[in-house]
Image 1 (tube, rainbow, N blue to C red):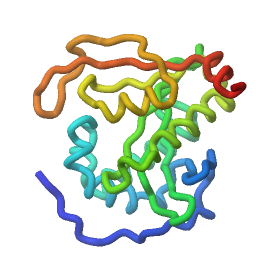
Image 2 (cartoon, rainbow, N blue to C red):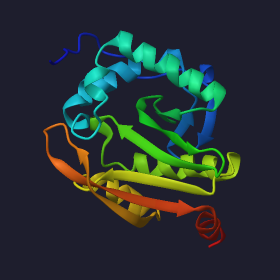
Image 3 (spheres, rainbow, N blue to C red):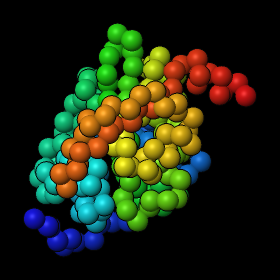
Image 4 (cartoon, one colour):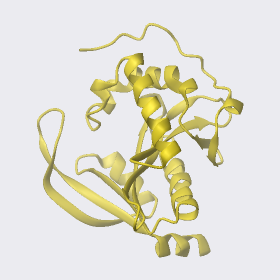
Length: 205
């Protein structure tokens, strides 16, 4: 079932009402906020065909009501530092909502995390996700004292794999026949990782 885009979102967001996590050259990461729900909804609707191939949650998040519910969940997760820490990606110059990144908490006792991300289709190929990964890994290693960060992807998702490689993540494992795609295809999952000492070595270069 497809949903029609009925109203244009406002192009810009007032960043002064959002809580900042990290600032990059072109983008900033923020804590989740109910002020972003309309923008997130619009981005999902316009990008659903491309995103749903690799992200199964997309088809269950096509209504504004459902986006509101997931944003409330994201806010609660961030407040309690549990499950997944979602971070909206905002263009510094235009205030445009570009997509979402975040950290899935895999094990607090290590601590280790997994980076996730998605970008609205119109902004793909501009380097925003690579910049977001740099910001979120800095937050994880420097603020959350992470010892390990992973990026996982379907073996057919070459764009996501390219992001991991471009940002210095090393291929660690291939989990064979581990993932069922939306079209029914069974594919492998590839695991890339970066350890704290590797991150520190990068910063010292």
